[in-house]
Image 1 (cartoon, rainbow, N blue to C red):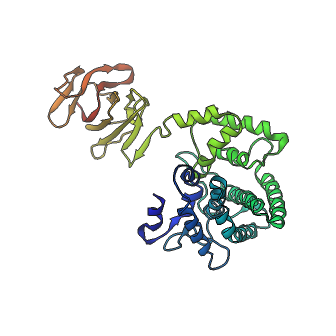
Image 2: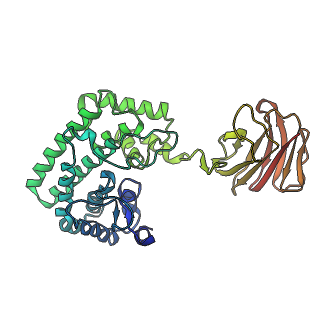
Length: 391
């Protein structure tokens, strides 16, 4: 778990995984982190040996940069705040508050004269699912800074640091206004991606007279364009579900959780993992219960998998159907009038549009589907290697 990540490979833990990813809140809620995280946040404080800056990786060795990307360094205030928020841990908060406050003050000093809209950063919203574009790094850096200010303000209130309460309140108000000036056009934020609605809504900085419009546009984007799928990287993903609940659409948050989050996971060039009720590229369709089927397509040298002018001598489609599922596999013909299909090396299951079966265990029949220009095979749980040969 996290301890192993901190110790592995003789280098520290990437701070972004502790904050910007999905780990910090879920770890505190699901595991006993009351011993480890005070130690880890102390390591962060110890790494402020050259002033209030933090590196991307703590302990800082071999990888990362100093100063950290604002969304990576944000792990320090985030974790100290989270220990207080979830566990009521004021001991860690009191011990590390000066270091947290120094870090926030340092981050304030990095905002250029042109405003928070041009804040520095390296990684940003790591990594949106392709082909989704990535929001500007300055947008996520500005958000992470404002979130840290808000969290540190809550710590200052809990610890009775009244002077800092006034300072942080003013800082949050001023920089939130600067954020809106840089990114808000009255209808939406920045490039209008899913994440650009989620982050300002989470911070609570959307102007009151525009709030209903922004929420409506966000939901239209999420349901209409995004089809209730996550299009953000680790930062946007972390805050999406809380924001859906915040705008009274917990039903959509539940829908996100219950659906397969990955429609098609490609491993390398020719292998994909797909739900067994979804279509896959290259003419292969998998149907059945909502479980996972692993499909890889291998072509002879020089062949192309995609394209209207597809030509091949043979294609091998490797299918793995999990226990508890049934699958329907469509093997592409791509205009070939006569095809033979083999499972493994020696068992012919199809020839000249006639299903043979070949005695293959788990194969439950097949037929030609003219509208799809494909051979349809019904399969039970198991692993199969179908080779399609054109004639």
